Image (tube, rainbow, N blue to C red; front, side, top):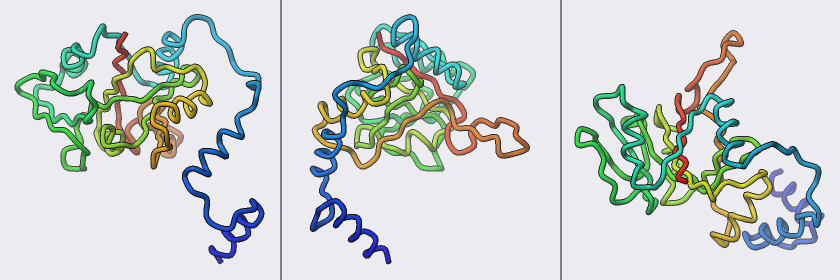
Length: 214
């Protein structure tokens, strides 16, 4: 049944074989309209809008002057924690940093046994919605986005885009291809399935904090 359905779709598209990654990218480029549709506007800059939307989604944010300040800012955010099991992504901005000596710091994907705190590097963020854009890659292990209880995300101010549709041209321009997965994260994990009461940390991090490098 599945093969028949897929074959019917291919015939409708005029293709003799499954679409390749290049076909998908070409189809996307052709689908971009010449003029953008009507979109929401806001007062102030994209960074201010992003922070506003993050806070509305129960996340927090802090501006820092450089990537060298990341360990100090993370330690300040986790001040109530004496010992920290920290996992970081392999992004260059997270390399060569000096973390507190009492912390256990490791690089790479997380698993359920050590899912306490992660620090990752976002690819971009969407000012309109307050969403963080996290494509999968060795520098950005997807497990760091969802397994730890606390997720700290580093983002450079120049990487903020205004609208969701601006993410895809930026991703293609900088990487040349689409990754296996792109996760859009808007605030900490939540659910209201239990008696319509909002619960944070239901399916992922309970806390989300963004360090915006100016």
